[in-house]
Each structure stands twice: as C-alpha cells, then as structure tokens.
Length: 141
Image (cartoon, rainbow, N blue to C red; front, top):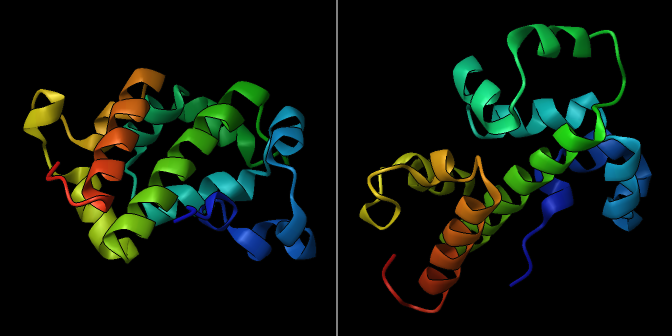
C-alpha cells in the first residue's frame, strides 16, 4: 500500500498536470505552493492553534503567505511530513473521515497525545507512522 502524498498536498488542483510526475524533493527545495498548505490544513480540519504548532509558524507568518506563491523550505518539509501521515492514515483506514478521526483521538501509545499532536516532531511522526503500519498488518495500535 503506497500512500499518495501528492494527493494529500492537493494533487492536480495544486500542481496541475505535473502532479502525476512531481519530484517531491525538488518541490520542497523550491518551497511548496501555499495552496498545498491550504489543502492539508483543510483536509485535517486544522485550527489556527494546530497550524501554528504543527508547522511551527505564527499567525503573522501565515498572513504573509497570502502575498506569496510558495512556502519556505523548512515549512514545506514540515508540511510534507503532515501530508505523508495523512496519506498513510487514509490508506490504512480507507477514508479521510476515519483517518482524521483517528489522528485526533488521544492514544495511550503516545502518552495520551493524539497522533496529530505527535506529528509536530519527526520522532513523533515516525512513531505514528509505525502505529499505522502495525494497524495495516493487523496489530492493534
């Protein structure tokens, strides 16, 4: 099962026809389109506070994005991490509604944090990814 990260980032609506052959490494190095951030934030139903914490940016920084076409490299990298977890959760749980619900549910395996809260760091994202892979193979997470 391959999670569709490009789709989670907005797919053809954000990247146009090149979405089918997008080089994600190159795209992150250039800075992802601001619309990719909007697609992920909408899909995950993020609140402004969650956006600040998960992307490590302030409200003022997000307001400046309205004047720009692309995000900076560091924010793009964090956004891809979120999109990768979202795509994996959708693939394992079979639809976005169930994926978002699971990502928001506190988990004893994460010390009572929700998977969404844990993905604010790379080690947390790795743990959430491992949990999803375990679920995919029939191990309760």
